[in-house]
Amino acid sequence: MGAVVTGIVLVQRTVEQDPTYASYIAAGVLVMVLGLHQRRMDLHFVLRHLLYPRAAIAMEYGVLLLLVAIALGLAKAWTAMAILLPGIFIPWIPLKYGTGVRARVVRAWIGPGLFEWKSILHITHPFGLVLWLAALACCWLPVLPMFLMGIIAMLVAGAQEQCEPRAMLLASATDARALLWKKVFGSIRLMLIMVFPVVIGATIFRPGWWWIHALFGVGMVVLVIYAIVLKYANYRPCVRLEANGANVAVAAVFAILPGLSLVPLIMVLTELPKARTNLDAYFHDHHH
View 1 (tube, helix red, strand yellow):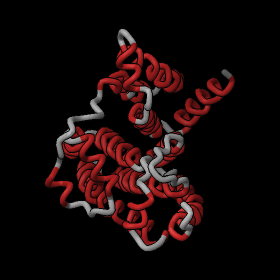
View 2: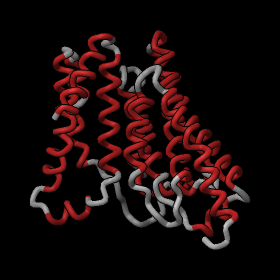
View 3: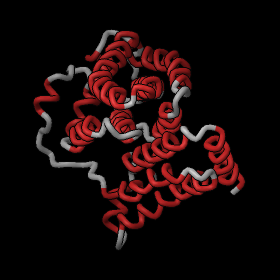
């Protein structure tokens, strides 16, 4: 209870000192809740065994959103409170689709080594494409296009939790440095393709916010890089690294807040040596 009260007070004081943070805090919490929902391993169990599963999940997420709403209400950030309202509909967002191959044209543009991107396209198409087009279409609105891009970045980051078999790892590159280079810079290229048009569009309508949009775009790119590096820092063949989700969610909150995207970058630099050391063991130890 003490931690909850402390968190509410900190958010309240932050917003009172700089009201421009309110919308970004609200959007960041929404992205975090979406990320938690995407990583729920008990989702199929809940859907099958509860009488009203979606409503139960909505109430669970509603408690998290309510705490932030209380802090924003105490700071009289009413508009930011309204941003939290769509969060109750997150349990109804489709995360899985059929088994057929989807997004063939888009997948053809992605290199074979970036299987995580191909996987997330297969799972979320056409939902992901609709999100991106909506972000472009809403560039004239404040915050919303950045929020939608944040959802896409969280989806991409979530795809990095599944570890490939060691045979696939060895076939992807000759050593740890080459693998990380291919994964990181390939993902940077794809993220820039998605983020750059939205940042430019939003800046056209709000030129005074150019630095906020630029920092947000950089933050989303760094968030995905962090998810990749964190994956290989804890890599184990054929294992889904569910615990990484909490770290990525924390990094997402910092990445969304203007001026704090440096925090995820520091997190990347901290995990990078661990990723190289861990991967070297799998590349050079024949007993794995």
